[in-house]
Amino acid sequence: MPFRRLRTGGYSRVFTPDFVQTAGVGLPITETWTHADQANNLDADYDWVSVVSGWGISGNKASLANAGGATRIDRLNVDLQTNDFRVRLPIVTFPTDRAGTQVIGACCRLSTGGASTFYTCGLLCADAGPVSLFLARWVSGVATTLASLTLPSLSLPNDLAVSAKGTVIGGWWAGRRRLRAIDAVIPTGGYGGIQGVAQGATNIVEASQATFEAVPAAVIPLDFGRYSFGRS
Image (cartoon, rainbow, N blue to C red; front, side):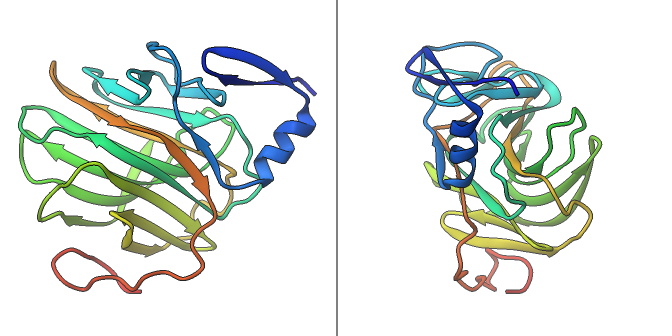
């Protein structure tokens, strides 16, 4: 079994597979992206795999800028050894005043294969329009929206997250679960990641870190006002 590398501050250290296994079961894991700026590569505290390349590091943040209309996807190269977990991204950059399409999303239940199959919760803004929070399922690159809502306002920085626990798939914003769906199409997948779109010369989306953690045991009830969708 090959060794894996843990990168910290621009340096690489080799650890045995036993270390990776321990890291996998010891949730939470946090990627800080404390690393020199680099294009098309998210390797920092941990190794990352580009499923569809485009994400890089800028100012110690995961950054996607002027990357065209395709969805760019990166996966943390650590097997979390569970199908039930949450991926949380503090979103720090998401302009809403420009033409083109911007998306940033957290992903869970990814696998090691090349197919783009996962659950995601993300923010979407097109042509300076309203910002939507959406929960979606991707299977072999085909996306199906499971739930969505329009945010009345966007305050940054704020946490965006997706969770999977059994067949309950959750979308989180600003510390609360805003979206919920029951879905059994992707029952397994022990990897998490980040995805996004930055279509337009000035479009950019950024997250300051990524935390891979257990799904909270006690879920705050959904807000059934205009800021929520679904049932608790």
